[in-house]
Amino acid sequence: MKAIRLTCLSFLLFTLVGSGFFTSEVHAQESSSIDFDKPIVLVHGIAGAGYNFNSIERKLRSVGYNQSDLHAIDFDDRSGNNFRNSRQLSEFIDDVLSNYDVDEVNIIAHSMGGSNTLRYLTQLDGIDKVDKVITLGGANRLGASSVPAGVDFTSIYSSSDLIVANSLSRINGANNIHVSGVTHLLLLTNNRVQNLIIEALES
Image 1: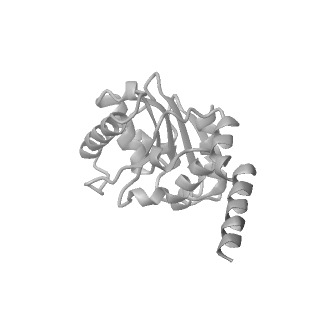
Image 2 (image 1 turned 180 degrees about the horizontal axis):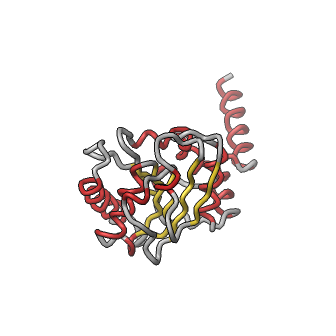
Image 3 (image 1 turned 90 degrees about the vertical axis):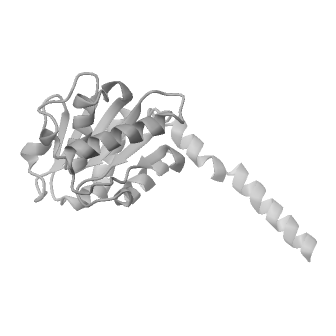
């Protein structure tokens, strides 16, 4: 009986490998134009935390990212303070890049995380360390009046966002994308928004 169980287990394992069960992540990467060598840094907003991006992380894994390449910061100051948080973000990104053979990250930021990111880019020499930035309901114009040259910036915002005004999210030099029917917090979990994130990473 034990021999039969082992034979069945071996057959099941062979079938899974043969069917590509363990290579779906590789296939997803091969069919995408995303640069998977660049890690993703996830930046939360006021009173937020890294776990706010759990749904987005699942989406990123579904298109080929490894969990180990998704890095969510947890700010010591949850008040959104631009000065303290941009400095902590700078140190965090340096730590992330020290483990890679690339010199740029991509950033996905929510709410005040967009402002913190822009201050990092414009005031703390972050431009050379960032390829793409995608903000979700970002309070972008609290960090800068326009996107610095050299950064591919996408701002996704919703007319149903009652927390951050659309006028703060729209910013010169960005690909400003308006959606409707998505609240401020649902920008983190909405499937339509997540598809836009993937499109921005592929562009």
